[in-house]
Amino acid sequence: MFISAVSRELKSARQLVANTLSFLGYQPVWQEIFGTESGDLREMLRQQIDHCKGVVQLVGQCYGVEPPTSDKQFGRTSYTQYEALYARRRGKKVWYLFIDENFPTDSFEAEPQELCDLQAAYRRRLQSEANVFYRLTTSDALEASVLKLRDDLVRLRRGVKQWAAAIAILLVLSVALGLWILRGQRETALKVDEMTVEMQKLLRRGVAEYPRIDVQVQEVRPNADPSVTQEKIYDELGKQLGVDPRTLREKLPQFAEQLKRAPNVTSYQRANAAFVVKDYGEAERLAIEAANQDLRAPLPETRTWTPKGTGPPPCLPSEFVDPHTGDTWRFDHSSGQWWSYSSSGKSTAMGSGPPFPCEEMPTAKRSIP
Image 1 (cartoon, rainbow, N blue to C red):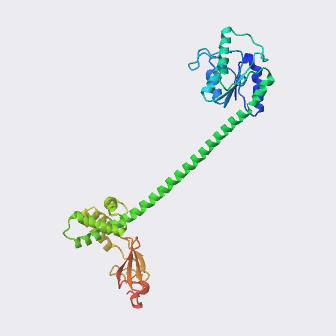
Image 2: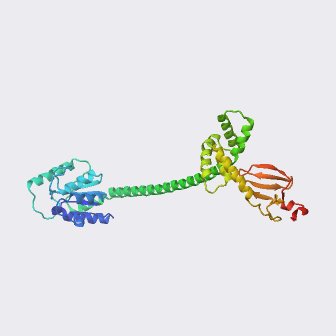
Image 3: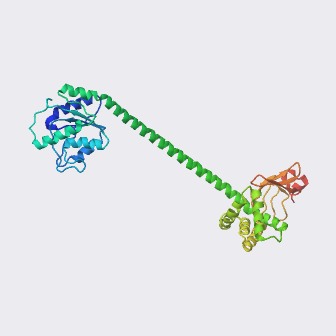
């Protein structure tokens, strides 16, 4: 709480007000605490008042010291008058305690008549306002007036606490909102990553299935318009993959183009990718290359057979993964058929007969000469 008064006249009265405010639990700020500097003191006063919640001004008979130049906003004022005027402009509460001529002030030299007239005009202007205390004639009356400010000061303090609580709540809400947004962004990023991985799987299957569906559609409609054929291919492919055909038309050629240049894919996968983007010459070359690689590749070992480089294996594990398509093959013991299970969960019966699962082979077939 800032205490404003002319030092030469009301230094003792200001100290009494400071002691009373301290008794009420407030921290007073006045001239003896922050000192004075040479030159224009208005900047220093502004800094001190900005840090206070209100101003208590003792309005005496003395004008006091004035700044070296008139103020642009308030005109000619003393430093004491400037303190209250600046506080009000900043929206601070100002309490005016009028000191009567009979009040026991400190001894001081009389001021020039010009300054006395300026202070008298200031007092008359304040008296015309509604929020003015009546004249105080004794130190006891001054102390009592400050004590009467307690209710106003409590409301001011409560307002400050409410403001601080509101700020604290806003900070907590801001932090909570920031954490919620961050969590949402992370969850969204994870979902996007999951969607991206799933979409890549579907597109990889689409590249693998495209040539087969293309052949089927061409067989049914050999003389159809190429654009109609292309649309039918994507319609059938979309039904099989459970994807919107329009999305496939947009995404699949782009993915196939990337797959052609990917480092860790087989010639068979590159051949299918080239077929999707209608690079038929490259697709044929890669398909032949893939077939030659298959012929040169050693047959897989089983529990009952070690390849010798000739003929098909007499048996296979009852479950294995096709290295080209990624489909899982299983032997159904009840029907005696091989089933192919794609990554989408769909199954297809692929026929019966040899090669048999190794555990199903007759004893005579297990021994290899």
